[in-house]
Image (cartoon, rainbow, N blue to C red; front, side, top):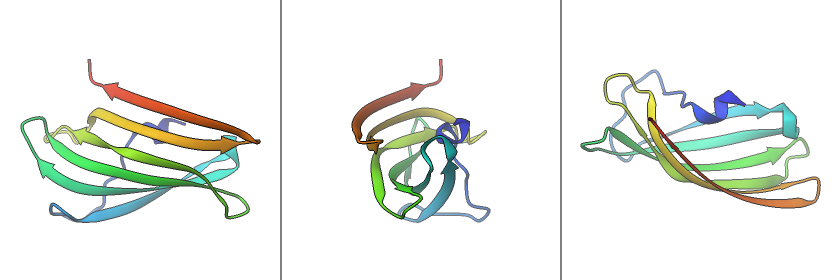
Length: 104
């Protein structure tokens, strides 16, 4: 579950407008999360990345969608702020969540 709150950066330099995709298994949901990060800009808060993702079940069906953005510290690359909204369907139940994480 902790991988849902961290960003795995590519091992090569990226420029604004460039994207990469990360894939994480979610065994608690029998699914895989595919998240695409797009580098937007470096601003006074840090590096801003847009987030767009899908949750795909073990039958290949998309059961969830995530949209939002994250800001990473320019020195440590640790996430200092994230805001996202997720729609997810699990066992017939539809869930909608909004999340805001920030460094205290």
